[in-house]
View: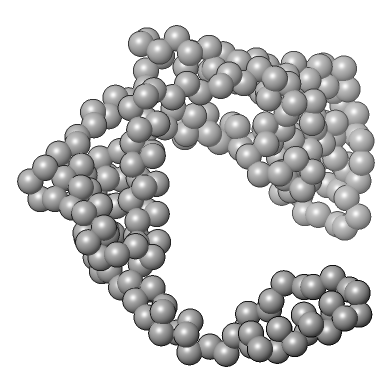
Length: 243
C-alpha cells in the first residue's frame, strides 16, 4: 500500500498537445450530434453532419494525423517515468526478497491446512532441502512470493483497479511491453466516428410537440378555484401543476 501512494506521488502528469485536445473535442461534438441531433431541426442537423462527413472536404475525411510511437530516445519524460516505475516497483521487491532470503533462509513460516504431494515441495519450500519435511510446510522465501502474487484481489478491493501495489501486474506489463504501448490511433477513431455518423438519420423528436402539448388537460380552471380559496383563507398560492 505504501508503494501505491509513493507511485502516485512520483507520477508525472501527462501533457496533452493542442492537437490532441482539439481532436478529442471534435469526437465529443460528433458523438453529441448523433445522440441529441433529434432535438434540433433537420436542416441544422444536416449542416453539422455535412461539416463532419462531407466526402470532399469534411473534417473526418480531410484530417489525417501522424501517429508517432513513443521512444525514450526522443522523449525524456518517458525515460524518467520508466526509471520511477523501476524504483518504486522492481527495486523494493528485489531488496525485500534478497533480505528475506539471506536472513530467514531455511526457516518455515506457516503450514497449509491440507495435505500436499511432493510435487509442491520446490514451490513451497524454496531454500529448504529436507526430503523428510512434509510438503505442507511453507518456507520464508516461498511465503514472500506467495504474498506478492496472491494478494492481488486484496489490493484491488482496498485500492481499486490498476493500483501500483499489484506487483504481479507490474511485472506482467514489463514482460509483455504494455508499459510502452502504442498511442491511440486518431485516424482510426475519426473513421469509426465517420461511419457511425453516416448511419445516423434525423428524426425530429419535437415535430408534433405543439399538438401533444395542446392535447393535454392543463386544469387551469381548477387552479383558479384553488387560488381563490387560498386567498380567502389567507394562505399562500401555489404554482399551477401542469399534468
